[in-house]
Image (cartoon, rainbow, N blue to C red; front, side, top):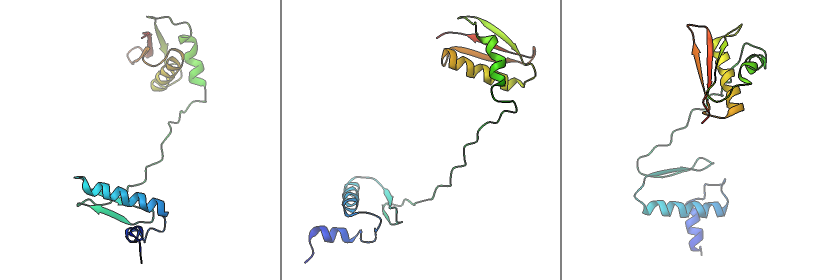
Length: 142
């Protein structure tokens, strides 16, 4: 003679990847979802699906690996270049940093990185002035 729990677990018999406790929890979840006005699809680790409504399970495409930006300049070179310009800045000061031997975007990035580390987020403005071939940095405070 089978018990109520045995009969209820029969619908999950194919879930070899789930323990009995997990099967009971899944069964309770499905009962709860069945009384709510929702559609659902549940896919277990072993590939079984439980659903209500006309939803379809689609596989996600794997995410592309995160690319890191590669600088053509040696590590620390830009930081050392901009540091003397920014070291003694006070609130309201504006400094102009020439591009020098570097590309403008790398100098601007180095300025923003140094300012963020030194003064905090949102306490500076970095602007590329292409007409005069320099980067302008203003320390704004708050």
